[in-house]
Image 1: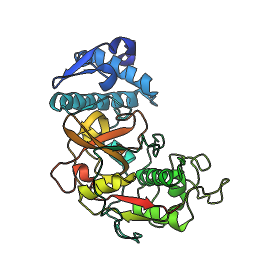
Image 2: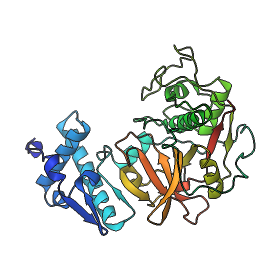
Image 3: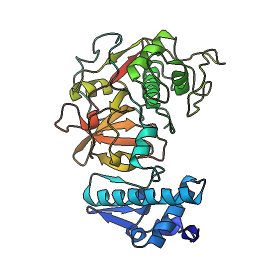
Length: 351
């Protein structure tokens, strides 16, 4: 018990310290720790207590707390080692720092890319003939992206990816940005998709077309778990789509053509350990191409000679760059970084 009796270090005091890595000065507020924190077990304990307080963490027993502290230490070592080696992005102590990487993957990923992809795409790729792409696009600045949402420990990323793309095209066509219900998809789109156990965005687009649209988020709020389908909930289905198109596979130029016109649902391989703790910068870290997470591409641009795609995640605003990640493009690989070019699609809307 005495192990955890030490007083907590003031975040205000620590925020003045600097962590130097790869010729970049990154302060405590960015990465969540300083080099001094790694110099003794007492300092690590104090850091853990401060981290628990910041993220509202509690544990059911001292045994569980000791276990989570050991996981925390291991994650901190990984974060520190990677920050010493990489320069374009950095990792930090976020709310996932007490989860082993296997626990994290089991709870927060959920795209089922092994499902047959095409089940009635409503037409050929509509942006094939687009030319003269702008140097940068940010649909957040154009008012077509809602707030960052949090799927919680439910593998419903596919629903969040779908909804964000529908919210985007609806705003572009109608001028109205309306936050829509992921829970409706989780509860009701069950023929092919599987709630908190994963799904695929194309199936969800097809469901929205067949079932007359989606409710507002406030009328059918998110539960962070599977619920009972309530298609007759109060409030009408406020947003419809006409269909969806698939972006040609492994074709970054086609991805950018579509992204210049609207936000896109994309799937990525988010199983790399660096992804769990991404805190900022242009990500070009280790990852495969076995798609396991649904996200939304909401723009693209360049920074310090590195081209990137702006990706909206569904792990809450504390992860990454206020809920977003910038992922490197022009990698020289057709599938793109983390397979982002492999499984992109977008909803269509006539009116």
